[in-house]
Image 1: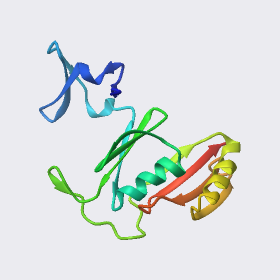
Image 2: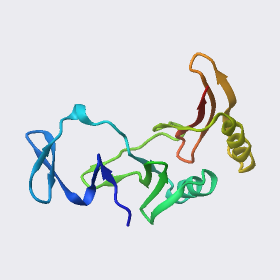
Image 3: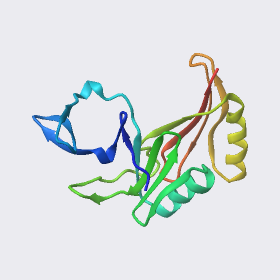
Image 4: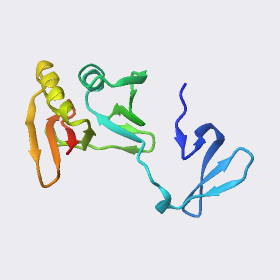
Amino acid sequence: MKLDKIGNFRRDQFLDRQCSGFPILWQLNMKAVHMSMNEIHSLDHTVILCRNMAETRSFYRDVMKFTLEVDRENWASFRVGATLLSLRPRGKWSAWDDGNLETGAAGVQLAFRVPLPAVDTCHSELVAAGVEILRAPTDLPDWRHRTLFFRDPEDNLIEIYAEY
């Protein structure tokens, strides 16, 4: 099993704790490492809540071609560069209920940066896979981006973009 990282430390060197409302990371030798909210500098794991796990898993594995690291009935995780993109069923979970999301409503917009020529290549691959394109490759000079938009099976907006 691959281990996630916290800063320069391996996750297995720490136990997560809460103290006075601030996250505390305890090394196994019990030396506390204090960290405040303004010291969070990366988003390394995103979880998409799914109405249809099988279809969404297939989309990210077969259409997006992301590397599947964990594949369970109620959880799938894909490695996307240094980030982990996970899927789980929408609904009751642990200590809460996710609630409903109307069909057609996006829960999130995910943007994936690629080299400039790859925007058009990705477009061709998506069209060949039967993915409905919301906006074909378009230059956005104010943003200095070339973008492509479509949806995943959960109706989330997906953007493939390049900076120029």
